Amino acid sequence: MMQPMPRVPPFDRPATYADLVALPDTLVAEVVDGELHASPRPAPRHALAGSAIGGRLVQPYQDGAGGPGGWWILDEPELHLGPNVLVPDLGGWRRSRLPQLPETAYFSLSPDWICEVLSPSTAQLDRAKKLAIYARERVAHAWLIDPLARTLEVLRLDHGRWVILGTHAGSEVVRAEPFVEIDLGLDGLWAD
Image (cartoon, rainbow, N blue to C red):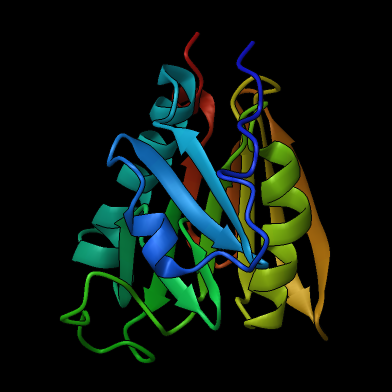
């Protein structure tokens, strides 16, 4: 099991974007509540779950093939939300809020939906600190995928608090907010 990576390096001041940029490209780096967090690239089970869920959503929601369209669905978008720099595994914006992608390498407009694929080294950060920031920034929907437990948690922001709409597991086929127009089979998200 991979050990969590500590805050790097220990600062006597809040971390900045310049601190993040100074790290090697081999790390996924974020500034969360003034702390610099760095993690290695995702492990294979993590990458499979993220790629599979993204692939299932892009065609009907981004491309509009066999679905409603109207979304941008992106892998690991860099979000600049106030002083925080977050990198969810996936992020989605309704095109009605974001008609065109920005020219910058980051987004300053919070997404409408995020998906975090949990790993032992990042689950606490994803669940505690990052979900709180997403709530403050009014991200309406969050999904938490745990490839080891083989679960999908679907959350909706309600008056500034996360409400769990459902926890799905194994090979269930679900209709999950905000993507309720399609059946989403979970069986291909897991490495078994």
